[in-house]
Image 1 (cartoon, rainbow, N blue to C red):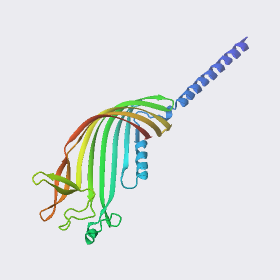
Image 2: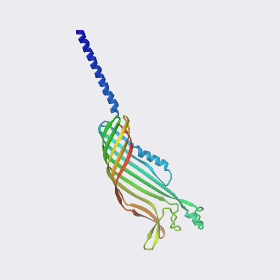
Image 3: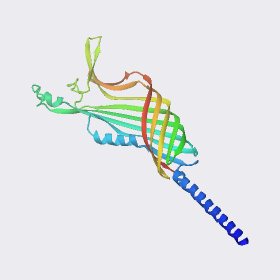
Image 4: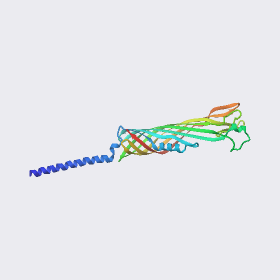
Length: 291
């Protein structure tokens, strides 16, 4: 009888031990399947950029290398995130955009044409080149807060941010024909005329350099998801909806014209101040590295 009781107690103990081991193993398997070890925790940092805009700027620069094409020399958003908790983060966004534009146009070479003024055949006359260069740069800074939720190795998030931006725009003109006493109205692709009501005639002039700057500010909401490839790397898609107020200051232009007995240059106001408000949807494809 005693032997039967001892054997029974040993059997029950063995079953309890095996059951406890299986439960512990089951918990570990669940934790592994949830990939909790590769997700960010409170105190972690992350750095990243918008790969969609970055790739687009590279492709645009490659496919539009010639004149008459706007080239987005660089455009992307850089992100920095600090995880306040396992489920929330503070983020800073730095947007950088650099656009370039160069146009070249053939015009008659006045100096050579004056040596043979009867040669008006456009296929035979010598030509020179006028150049227009446009350079635009924009820098944007945004500060936001996001809440995150986990499913498998994917973290979805929603959040909001406020931002401010400054823009600089400038145009440069280079002419193949110089303005001289013998040639006071040189052939120029970008030449302009302004009516003078006092004399009833038109005054010839051409731009040399123009510049302006603007700023914008606003706020937006965003929603997205990050797929964690490993502990320190994720890729994700994000949708943004921004409300933005934009204002551009007046544009001034340095012009060249012939006045009395010399080439005269003057900086004048060309485009007045203008502003506007708009709602802008956009998407991003983010690559993030975690520390």
